[in-house]
Amino acid sequence: MDVHSFHNVLIILHATSATISFFAGCFLIFSLKYASNQRLFNLYWGFLIAMVAFLVCAIFVYWTEYSSAERIIFPGLVGLGIYMLYRARSAHRLLKTQESGWKHGYIEHIGFTLISLFEGFIIVGGLNSGVPGWLVALAGILGVVVGRWVMHLAQQRVA
Image (cartoon, rainbow, N blue to C red; front, top):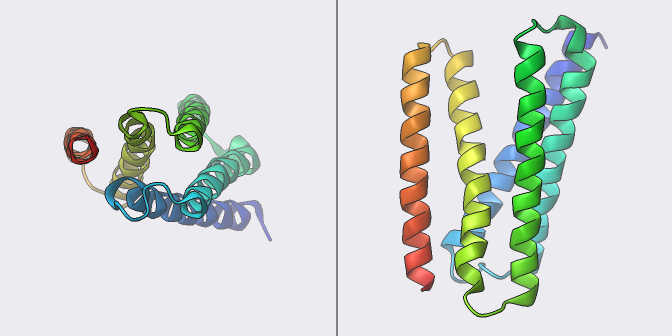
């Protein structure tokens, strides 16, 4: 398998992991039945880790093909991925202890990762589809605004 094909396989695995983590996370914060389900959290967490790992691998195998700008952008995305893992781990600590008012912070942490994943879907999907950059940026801004509003609604529901 050549480098380009291997890179594509890693990107598909990265996107698939992100999608599974996204939907599991949605169930964790939007479903009263599954909000504290440890098995579902483990699914969300495991695929979030896989998403970051596949991103790192994809960047590594294709590094020589990237432009100077991409060599700055992609490590930045890895940094965001690591921060997303930190936020998910913080949510897990709240889930385990379930101290007073834990659900607000839990939703905030998972919500951050969901908004970040959604932004990735919008930005990568838009740019790969040939959508003008200004429209991708507008959709990205709208995604953050709507995502924050939805997180606020989820937090109000559990308050």
